[in-house]
Image (cartoon, rainbow, N blue to C red):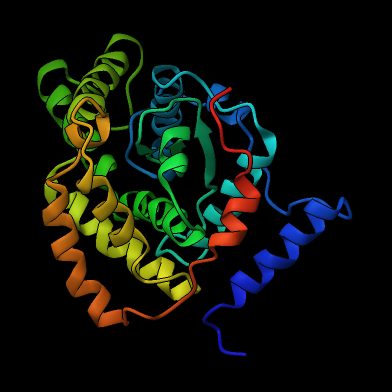
Length: 276
């Protein structure tokens, strides 16, 4: 068997074991890590990135209604996400994937390996390939250091004004940088060029693992057909039509028919996907 699709076969075995009660998933979400994170240092090296990212992750969870309590859904999302993460350009990070208990359609990430998808986004998905591509997009942000670069710029600005030591900061300076980042990120998202790059990186990684290359493009096209202007998805991302257009070139280079959708497995793993 070729390397393409090997992880999907592995995923099939894991999901079969879980559904039959014969085993447990090899990856578990450690939501307590979100509460432990957020120490006193600013992002420079990997430990500081994880510390700041943990603090950002806590605020994301709080702003989106907490973590979805359905353990089976979280395990499934985590398993798909780990399959994407291990094939990214930063496979050695300790990634954490979780569902946010919000019906808004969105997905977010934080430095250090924290990736979230809303319950609303899952309801809008039609296949595992689409879910994988969404998670891969967020992993792409982390691997490319998009949010980390912004945090580093904010740290540099604070250092110029407050005299922050190069090794890190505590107290009000830390809180000020975190608040500034969150106010911009949650309201406006990342720069458009970062989003386009994450689209490309995510599609490439998801396709490399074995999912359909058109996963993200199909999801975005459907979102653009019936736009909900009140959703954070449209407020924090570039024009959907432009994203679909740019992804066309990526998909063409990868092969439009490459990979699998796994619609049935997605439906079975997420059923019944309904608002409590």
